[in-house]
Image (cartoon, rainbow, N blue to C red; front, side, top):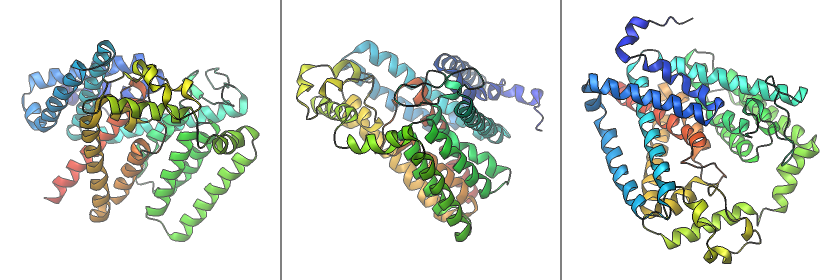
Amino acid sequence: MMYYNFEKHKEFLYLDLFVYLIPISIILGNLIINIVSAACIFIYFLLIYKRKIIYNNYKNYFFVLYSITAFLLLNLIFSKNFQLSFVSILGFLRYYFLFLVILFCLNEIENFEKVFTKIVFVLVLFVIFDVLFQHFFLKDIFGYEINSSHGRRLSGPFGDEKVAGAFISKLFFLASLYIYKINKGIKIILTIIILSAVTIILSNERSSSIIFLTAGFVFFIFCNMQFLKKSILFLLTLSSVLFLVNSSANLKSHFIEVPLKHFQDNHYRAHYLTSYEIFKDHKLIGSGIKTFRHVCGDKKYENIKTKYVSNRCATHTHNIYLEILSETGIIGITIFTILNFYVLISLIKDYFKKKFLNEITLLLFCNFFILFWPLQTTGSFFSTWNGIFYWIFLSFFFHFKNKLASESI
């Protein structure tokens, strides 16, 4: 058990204690996320005020912030709905500061990385257990019943929000950093991948299931384990998934029959086509952050080629790339794409060059793949609940990037 030295952490104004609440707040909901985020950012600025050197040490990240803010203000001026965009830009800035907060804690506070990933690992296991409990006993440990809308949906501790599978998939590989750190090895990670895959499929979240299984396959291929053992575990996982889907009429319908029937045309296609048409009308800086829900109803978009044209509107486009393309235009998608290519190329290079940390790089790559693979349906990049996962990942990526750079000197 790790002893927390309150006297020593006083110099950080106990910032880490508040940051440890971030993973827990994701389960508790948007209100708690906002309260915890605000507390973390407030303490962080107090630290900057007390210790000016913090700003100097992270000034490059602040310069990036200034550049992005300048573009966001331009985007706001030409937004099709000033109020929606203004609130969303404040939310974006909040998460950028939260990214700086987590990065600071990872870089400066001893044992923060281990404690934070341990908390995430415990929470992921808790959600897995709760979803499985709900599957077998029809209620989770908090009394939430199985939701029958859109099939048999398991939500576990999230209640009416059907996001348990997304939570597990988006945090699993980050949580696995803890397993690697305590030297428990790849076998445990691979075993939990199988358990997680089964749980996510049972949650009936199709996109989360597909992207997690694909990332798990990538991990199987590149992890440091004997080929025979990897092959056995892979076949075991594949057999479990096929048996699970084939043995349930609900899962078989949701994962096989419905996608095959609606593969060429569906309501997601309507969202995608509408977002592309919005981009064509606002090429340079977009229609304004979070304005898809406001603009999509315009009559000019009734001519998109889909029989689901009446379902073209939603709160977001269900794909972060099309969301950024339509709402921030060429400038926004260029910034976003450059960042993603930088992360992708860095992870690939580090995996093959820095063999002493290649398992960590592989875990980060799988996390990156789940969050940023373009050919998937997603939540909104600018939303409170869905958006937080991207910034947590980026904090860990830049932390390890800095760590690798310093160890190479």
